[in-house]
Length: 253
Ligand SMILES: [Zn+2]
Image (tube, rainbow, N blue to C red; front, side):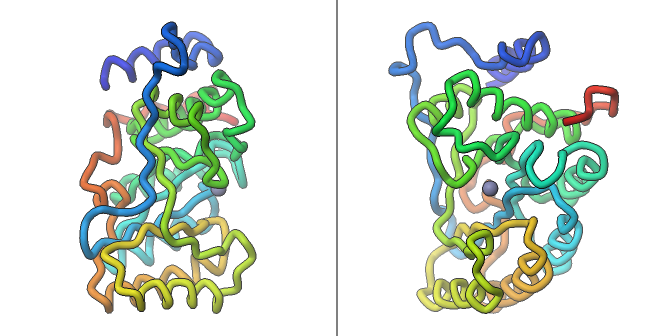
């Protein structure tokens, strides 16, 4: 994996378009990345948060940390806000608190509408930002809208990543009220699942301030351990970990 990563880094440093690794034997021969839709460890819940970094990151982290819990954040590079500057500080803060950071790709495009090179560009740009800010290279990617095809899975495979979907959607991004999202969680918990992989959005104020503290208590009362996605699967969160870079003029969207 180190060789692949180094090759990608070198290519992308030279030119963004070069970030798409070549596949001389043809896309058909490229294996498909794994797609995870559920956790595998018993009694675990992975609360995941998409679409940031955004202003509610600190509050979500504080609620999780206060309860001895961890979350997983699928961040974009330039969606609600740019990942650099104040958001870079938020991302580093999350990383230092032990939450998992993963890719939601750069600009929240539907990857199934893009070419091979465009897919890699969407993937690489946010990976580069996470590398600069934290030194870590993510092992997971969640495609925007949960949309993917074989080309997206092949691109993820080449980049050493797995896809992460979910088995519970709080529907906060679909306009669900707080009561409706709570009912989705309550109904799911009542079925006593072995584990839950839950989709939430850190960009929604009511999710940060009303759903998260409430659902942490609900889940812990039922004996679930709130862990990162990597932990609920028993795999590594990152392909490599190193020191963060020093901010410079390239840290912009
Ligand atoms: Zn999203």
